[in-house]
Length: 307
Image (cartoon, rainbow, N blue to C red; front, side):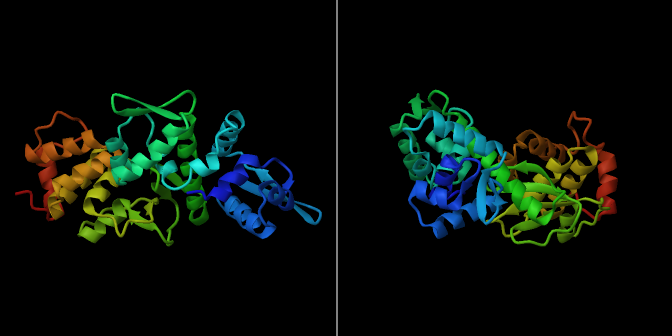
């Protein structure tokens, strides 16, 4: 997420510092320091101003920068630039409440040993403690979670702006986000989803002027289970639920996979309702679902077998 040199620069940079001054403070070469500043500018955490022949560095107004610099000022005895490397920021992102090692390993999709190493480093410095096998923050160090969240959001926002300046983030986690755009996006890591993606599974729907993309460095393509969740995040109305029901019925979506994706996106109740609707043939007390006979007609129109 951020290299140690980048965290070191953010910790000490003040409005108007030059590259030369920062290099002297941190005891790095100007060329090495300059590359770090360039990376931070690209991430929207710093910007530069020309002052004659000199380039001055200025912290951005990103909330992440404010939180981080405040932590550094108040806890100057802690080397945050060393502490927050590796998997630490990813673990902190999901550390929004007291959690066990198993909880954090599941949320971050890391081995327990990896999470244990991160938590041990935090505990050894007095930032976290344990009660009944659950880790929790000590004092005001819960701001580290806020920093991790704000930093991830800032980086997602910059990545989206680079391909769709008017795009909107609808959902995000540490390494992914779902976005709505007004234009087509053809860039590495962006995968089309929403109603346009249904065509890949032989379901053609009337499209709106908006396009939808999920960004992920690890995703190969959007699966039916993921598409169903994305569709509900875009709009959880009767029409979009009906489209998800058609998809589940048409491609025989694996229920375990569907529930796993639902947990990731915080849609457990919504997905459970979809499954119950199909299992009971419409016997669900929810106004956001069509009557069963209406859904049967819709399925027939799209040649989806409900048997």
